[in-house]
Figure 1: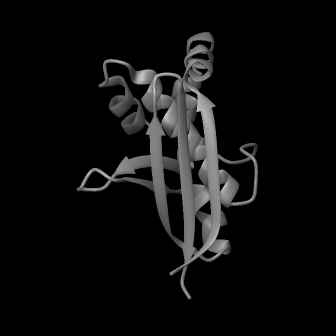
Figure 2: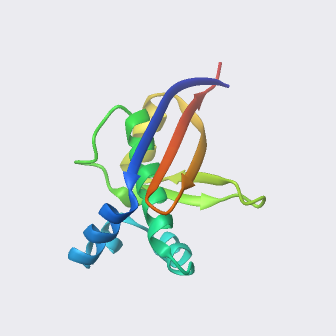
Length: 126
């Protein structure tokens, strides 16, 4: 597999918290029910929400487009059996990745009290 795109995003945790507080419907519009359950299970869920937001943005950057027109539910941040983060794509997002020959993703998430970051690497067959 060869890397064909890299996307990185950094967000302020408080900006995501304020956006979700200000617009109660935003949480369900952006995050899947599994993502919401995972984030809400934490004592401080905002870092987890922010890291997932950043991951979705990083994947979108790899796909060469902005969020308009793409369903954020089409990018779900999940975990492998060993706890490593991964993304599951569906719908238009998956089709866009397939059109670009992307077959696999590597994702890294990190967060501190005030910031969260994510990097996505899109891989294609040689």
